[in-house]
Structure formats: structure tokens, C-alpha cells
Image (tube, rainbow, N blue to C red; front, side, top):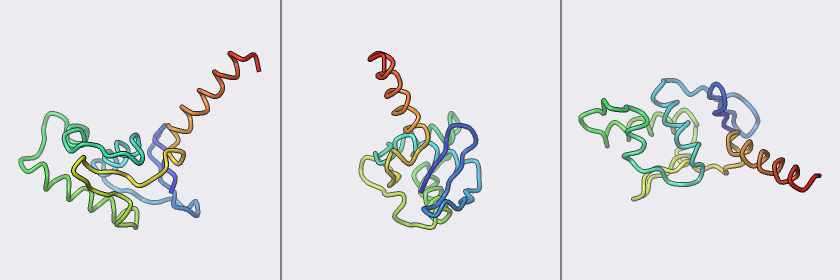
Length: 116
């Protein structure tokens, strides 16, 4: 799976086929998890990201519902895992455009410093 968060959110499966992730909150959840690809993101951070200063009465249940919708959209129940630390998108950071950009920008800066 590849995820683009620089610009409009786009998701492609392993074959490069676009994946439709419908719903603003589900897309926001995916984008936030992608920024910490492979690492857990705490429930409080996710609730704040998705709902801001107007969280639902039952935050835990509402977030679980969004995660379920995201898993269905991605077509893989194991794409988002839950732990005591929060939720984790099971993806390598290299599959997220923002992480690739940071790495390439760092490589370019190092090459420039080395006059390469």
C-alpha cells in the first residue's frame, strides 16, 4: 500500500490501484496514522485530530467505529492494529510520500553540504 498525504489524500494498493477511503473523519484518521507510519498513535491524539475541540461523548467507541470503517476501506483488518499505546498503521514509512520526501530532502541537503 502507498499513501500520499502531501496534497489530496490518496491511497493505492500493492498493485497501484486507487483505494477509495470515503468520509472526512476516516480520511483524517488515516492521514494522522500515516504520519506515524508503523508507530502507535495515542487515543487522545487521534480524538483531538479527528474531532478537535468537539469530541464525541463516547470517544473510545467513536474512534473504534472509525478504525473499523478504515480497515474495511483498506480491505485488510490487519492494516490498523490496536495496542495499549494506541492505534498503529501497519505500513513502512517509505510507503508514505511525506516520509519519502523528508528522506530525499535530507539526502539532498547532505549531498549539497558535501558539494556533491
